[in-house]
Length: 303
Image 1 (cartoon, rainbow, N blue to C red):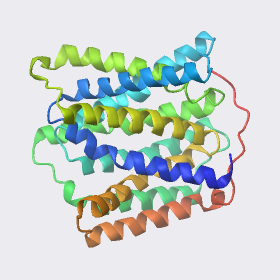
Image 2 (image 1 turned 90 degrees about the vertical axis):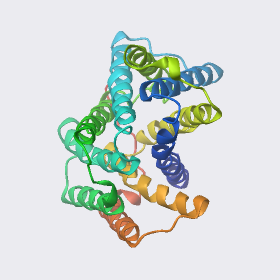
Image 3 (image 1 turned 180 degrees about the vertical axis):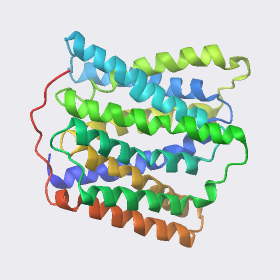
Image 4 (image 1 turned 120 degrees about the horizontal axis):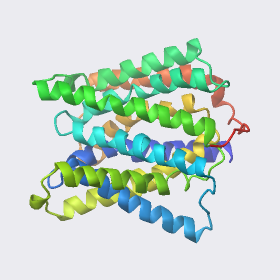
């Protein structure tokens, strides 16, 4: 993959995932969180299996690979997104973005011990710190916790960036050889099954209304936030170090602010501008050594 195409895909990824936080919140108008998340990944899984069939991508044959994909689906997708959806009932979408901004730190720490080619460096550590501070600047007004349920939601939501980091580093270490469709179709189907079971057991489904808004948010998140974004991300993961690629997390708030300004006519506060500058500086500091080249794919062991 050429360098221009790689960076174009990164831009597309940032735009898609930067818009998902408020869309998740909008879906709660008529859908409970686990039903919303489960429906999203059910649609995604169906679409991805269809794409796999059309393009002749076969499922992996080894039981070890399937066990890894099951873990990725239940933990890396199901648990990670399940706690985010549940938490956004009680905390602002901006605070969820701040909490998930801890993901690059978790990835960097795990990669240091699991991936020999990705040790912690002063540049990366400084970049992660600056990026997180920038996100805090942007969303500092969302950091107030009015009650105990909000505090619990923060603690639960923090599970997401941690388990997502475990899954990402695991894929980089043991699943590098798998096609992006293999890393998404089955895992998203597993995640959908787990989330829908939790929904049936814990949520009142008798009051659910599948309005146009509800269907629209599920389809948007399924087709763009899941199918397109995950396939792009796992494609890029074959080219970049995982501890470098996760810096896209810090761009999501910047995208959200830009979209609000362009599409909704929202004003941009000075704190948002300061935060954006800090984020950009942090990303440049951390990734400058690799911006001039796209990493060659190393030979990795399979699941």
